[in-house]
Each structure stands twice: as C-alpha cells, then as structure tokens.
Length: 419
Image (tube, rainbow, N blue to C red; front, side, top):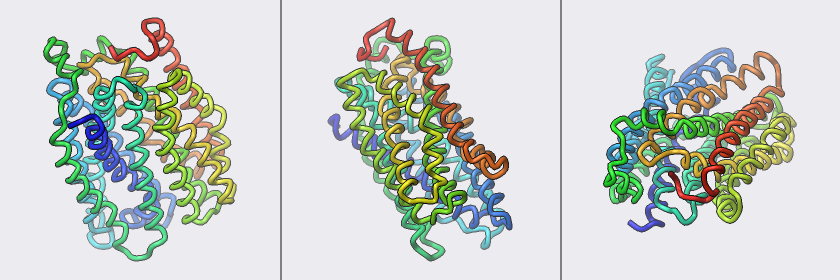
C-alpha cells in the first residue's frame, strides 16, 4: 500500500470514528428528550452530558489497551479493532429503543454503547497520528495534521447530519447517521487490513528498542512528552467542546437564535476548520511550526471571550463571525500539535504514551466541558464564564508546551526527525 493510499485509509477510518462520536454531542438536546425525559429541560440536558462524559472517562482504558498493543506488537492491529468496536457501538445506538418504549433500560444501554465508543476512540485518535507521522518523514507537520483533519472532517459530517436532522421531522430520522456510519466503518476495516507496519516500528523491533511495558517506559524516558501531550489535550478539549459544541447551546438558549441557524453556523465553522488544517500544516512545514502553534495559542488566550460573546448576540451574522474566529485558531493549533508532541517520545513508547496522556486529559477536561459550561451559564448565570474557561486552557497549554519546546530546541533543530 503506497503512502497516499495509507494516508487515505487511516484518515478515513478516523473520520468515521469522530463522525459517530460527535454526532451524539451535536444531537445532545434532541437525544436528552428521547432517553432522559424530564420536566426540566436543563436537567435532561445535564443527564445527556453525563452520558457524554462517561464515554470520555473510558478513553484512557482504550489508550492503555490499544497503546500497549500498538507499541509492543505493531500499529496495525489496534487500528482495526478500535474501528470495529466503534462500528458495533454506533449500530447499537442506532437501533436502541427510546425511553418511551422500554423505560430506563434504554438509558442504561445508551451509557454502555457510549462507553464502548469511548474505549474505541481512546485507541484510535493518537494511533492514527503515530501511524501517519511514521509513514511520511518529508512533510512532518502535514503528516501530523491528517489525524486532526480527519477528526475535524468527522465533526463536520456529524454537524451536517445534525443540521439536516434539525430540519426534518419524523421519529426515526436521527437513527440514520448512526446506522449508515456503522456500515461504512465495516468497509474501512476491510481496507485497513492491507496496511503495512511503519519503518520506524520495524527498525525499533529489529534493534530491540521496544519495551516490555511501554507506558512504564514512557514515564521513565519521556516525561516531557507526557506533559506536552496532556497540555495540548487540555486546550483542544476545552476549546473545541466549548467554542464549537457548547457555542451552539449558548446561541440557542441564551442568544435566542433559532436552532436551525445556530446549527448552520456551527457546520460552516467546522467545515472551514477541516479545510484550513492541512493548509496551515503546509505553512508549518515551510516555516517554524512551533511559532505558528504558539501564535494560535496566543490568539485563543485573548480572543476566546469575544468568540463566546458572539454566541449570545442573537444575530446569525455575529454568530457566524464568532465561529470563523474559532475555526482559524483551532486549525492553527490542530495542524501543528501532533507533530510537536510526538517528537517527545521514543518509537517504543509513542503510541501508548501519547494515547494515555491525551485520553486522561480529555477525560477530565473534554468529558466535563459541557457540564462545566452548563453550570457556569445556567446555574451561576455567568455568561462570560465559558470564554474565560477557554482562555485559561490556552494559557495552561502555552506555558507548558513553551517550556517543553524550549528544552527541545536546545537539543535539536526544529524539523529534525523524532527521537
């Protein structure tokens, strides 16, 4: 399988996983009434956000299992199994009876399927980035951006599907994206069976540079990589789930924008993110990718409150402008993050170390982002809270990654190959 086909196969599978995973989040308001009926709409929404968080709590489990396999036995197997798990869970949600049909048992099964999805994503996302950066050494930032591109494209399709559903009537329409994506995932699994192991892994195996317990080795040898990865995960988790997904909730519930218009603005924003990620990655390969990344974090630090202020404007134009600012910042950081953080790991610790550090941070900050924002806005009546929460995550990432990368630059050139 040549480079272009390998990139396409890996990216397509990641795209599907994120489409399946985030469609649930975009449909949170709608699904809350199907599986958690309550007289208080805010309470119902909080319950569905708790289910969303449950999937994030399980991501570190997937990272440990699939990361261990990927670092010790090869990158291919966990990339196939994780996609299979996602297909099974997504199909399960697609055929699951609602609360009106079987009562609270529907809520239980919904949680189980979301937990399985969380395990799958924990083994897929960073694994895709590892595989792609090891495939292509000539364009390191572009190679590292494909996983972010695929996840953004998946979010775009998930948002598009949610937008279409919002315009449609009929009780079964919400099931179609779940069922369709599960079927397509099976086709992606078939294509992934022809993937080859990367040269980096084969060389590490031949030179006896692999570890019996990769995650333990990552802690001993690559602490900087773990810290750097966790910091990027904090920022991207908070920034994306606040500035994109919760942005829609604020636009509707606080700004009073019609749900269809809010969904349209979100879809336009996430599509633009998808287009800009590889564009900014190409820029990073031609200049200093570290400086480009830091500029994106600085923009996030100062402009996040403005982004969320646009969400409550009640104007479609201002809402769209807020999403455009968000998507430029997201694209800059997402285009450069994986290449920077993966350089902090050895080949034998890269999959497990980056997956676990990313998943733990994502579980803590990504899984709770919607609940934190809902608490700030609905209970504390602090409309400006979500924007400042985004700024705080940018500050944490900027300081942490800046410190790690300063030490990194002292040891090697900006575009040198991974350790």
